[in-house]
Image (cartoon, rainbow, N blue to C red; front, side, top):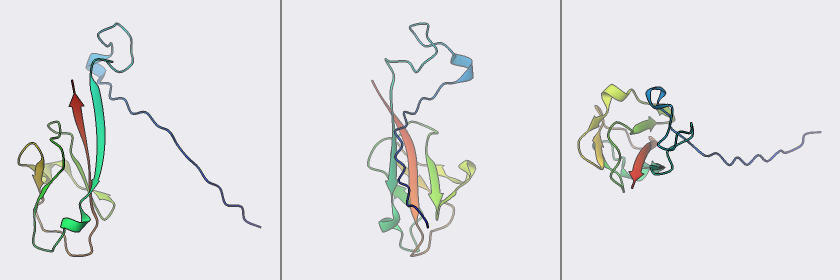
Length: 108
């Protein structure tokens, strides 16, 4: 007999650079004055077999974009960050490919 298990996770993400181990208040948690928001966008509907340039709905922080093609994380050095909310891929994904992007936006 098999039992179906449902798992729900509530995860709070913090980025903590080793060189900046203490926040402005002297603690070791995330700096409360720095609001970091992480977004995940599915751009699959933009894939047409020819397009190599894609736009996101928000301006992202520099060097925070992570691209997944068919679930595989793409190498950072192959992604061209061409603006505050756009990027390029070296080759066009083909129709049927799944294109997803994760990125960070810091709000003040």
